[in-house]
Image 1 (cartoon, rainbow, N blue to C red):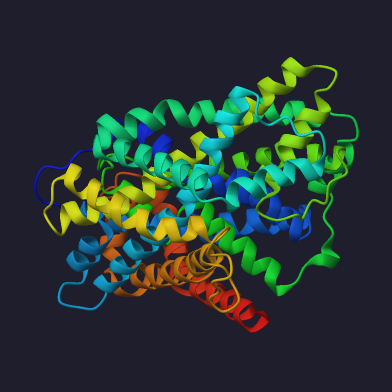
Image 2 (image 1 turned 90 degrees about the horizontal axis):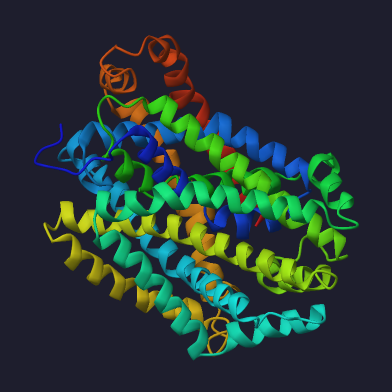
Length: 456
């Protein structure tokens, strides 16, 4: 159904690296460890894996089918599959969601850029936990330093996307994603080797079922959506660059596997070190920036060179992870303007950079001069995070499963999933998958969403 000339990823490997790069981001390194810390350790991890396998992966496949079937961005894709209807508004919501996430996500990306530079220059020598917290608080609450870092990070994302699918996104992610995996494994090995880290390992592998609440399920599902970039248009857009010969199930399976493994390894990179230092594991989003610099410095007193190398590698991993995810969300909005508004890629990238920068400035300053500005009791930054990850992404994923399960012709879905019937393995499981998408997933998402809303 696609028309016109459209760039394609060179191979299934490059698509998986790009999609895995989108999935493997700050959601794994920055968000996942503190979510584990707040919601019960191994019990949360188990729920997270089940959500990823039985809910998130089928939704990933739904979005991939929509994207490759139409060869279009999310808005135009829905308009092609359901012309003259309001289903295109779902595609528009994904663009808005991507815009909101990119705005506040780039603030944290700016933190990672600043801390990477500080680690290289030796500026993270915190002699106490209070000093480490003070460094972050002073930085994040100031005006110019976080703004400059945020702007620099956002500009990097814009430059990569403006270079195109093959010249920018593919070229960056095909080396960045594997490198990211190697970096986090090195850090995890170091973290587990620290004296006293065994309590952190036990925390990650021994479930405490008494801590399970309706919120645990909701946040685990939300984290799975957030991590796999569901409900935000990334999968639809990246899949529109897939070749028709690629296997959607295999590509989605590898992406989910890499993402889940990376999240768990990231947990082992962070939590053993946290326990080794006697720090509270549920200390929130700032865990990475307030606690780990202190931990790495203190643990490296006997080997300062090793400590500095690990610190540099850690914040390099955070920076790379932030970029691989940021460019995928940036691409959603740019591709919308290229497809629907018929703008050039470079012009679209510049315009989206400006719009995102405006909202991002408000998020950035919400830790300082705008910290007293509250929306339903939350800061501007937290409001954007909660709105997108707990509500917009979840609802969009729900509607996408309903669209593929109920609105799209089943023969069309089968044709795309099985590559015209040539993938016999996919054909054998199609009816079961379609049943899950049509009946099971909507009920599960609604139940968890309502439970979370009532709890809040």
